[in-house]
Image 1: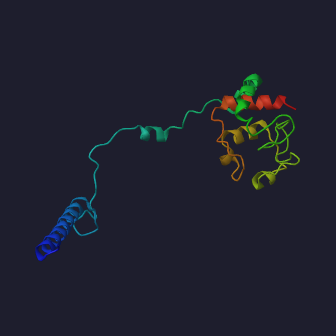
Image 2: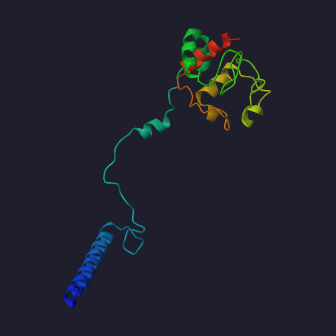
Image 3: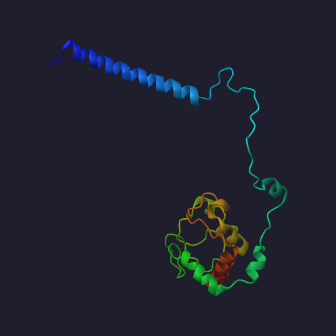
Length: 176
């Protein structure tokens, strides 16, 4: 079945395939390789062909226009609107005095941090029991919990709108 001519053809096909592969690899290497060999751009300045103006230079000198400060927004906060925002919190927090995934939030405004009896707080929060949940502290925490208090167990990403945070805090201030 396998005679000398068949074996010669198979060997020739394998060698030819390897040769084509080697030539293709060599061609690709020479076209696309950015090496550190002499003559490949060391020490040469590379100029960009074109530039797109994004206004970054102008914006770098200017400070971003900040919205109204929290105290101003909190003074005009709507507790009824805050009750609607609390819907995002209901999955982990309760207002009936019992703990769930998170501690209950009854009377949380101006209460000492990490002091709800029976709830296992994170080490980051348990270390701050002398500090108070003032509206300003709650605002910072609700904006970005992990950024405000690294190590917190709260996995919520935060409320980006200052109006939502102010309304929520105003609502929580009415719940005792």
